[in-house]
Length: 314
Image (cartoon, rainbow, N blue to C red; front, side, top):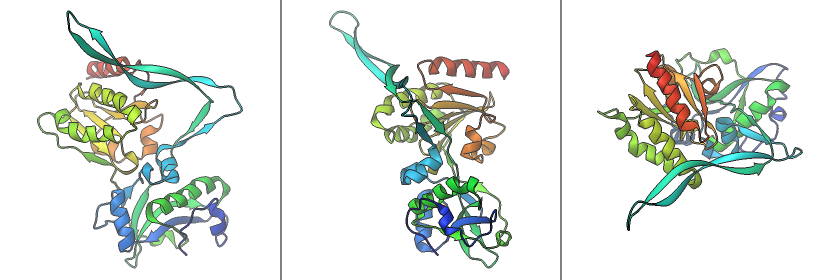
């Protein structure tokens, strides 16, 4: 049975399952579903093993899955937090001459304390049964209380992205084995100067960010680009707005997050293909990165310091 409405708790659709039994959420692929999958970033014709993290813009459940969420503690006293903005001013530069200056500054404001919950990072995957029927699925999940929150959000994510979901309790071993291929990144044409070649696509990333964040994001991307990366890639699906800059000579990748007041991640680069096939949870995991540079006014100095160490290591 396909469920096309938002659900508050997935357990009401699991009464036919045994405790701790495995199940998946999914839909049979028909032309309407295939069109939606293409819009999410899947390659068409579909190939078993393709995986995509649905983009946050599809709805609240997709946003929780791709970006995480904050628990706001309204029962606690407010605290001072900071947001980054580009401050622009006009400076006297000689007789009858002025010039415009700008810099990134931290602006303090009061807010309730909050705890950030990491994204669930549940991906949609194309699978084919032994009889040849194609499905798009998420999971598997365990029919127990500990999995309820993630499975419920995943069901709502499928409703937002694909129009609905089904609970699949079929024999999970009946799926045809296929290599996993994540479609999360677009490697931009390198050319003689990868940074110059990537500028139009990166400017599009900036323009899709909230208006108040664009100046700060543009300044950060330009600072990384000035280090002359060997390649640049932009995120697709749930990685929309992210950019990766690869420095083969230092064996490092710089992963820039579009959200102001988040962080930039410096990752080891055994190979670009290895990084590209990591899940979002793996990339953001504390053990997966060399450095995490928080978005504050010290960001530019911290970036220089990390890449200077990279030059020394090389």
